[in-house]
Length: 83
Image (tube, rainbow, N blue to C red; front, side):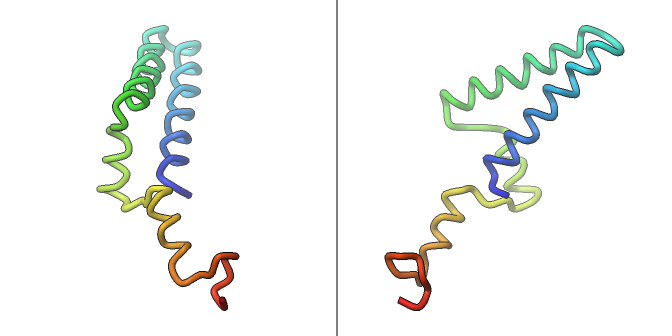
């Protein structure tokens, strides 16, 4: 899985969990949903995401551009390594 997919998975999970917790315990859990939304908004404008930095440093998760660069090395135009 790529870095972008991990970020979407984590953000979606945090939103769903905070919505569930807001119904069970306290409506203040909706602040977590607002934080995730604000972070997604900010990262779309600035192209910087804290979760991306955390995942890269802790787990060495490659970005999609890194994977695309590795897939094209040594392959022909059709994608076959025999060309």
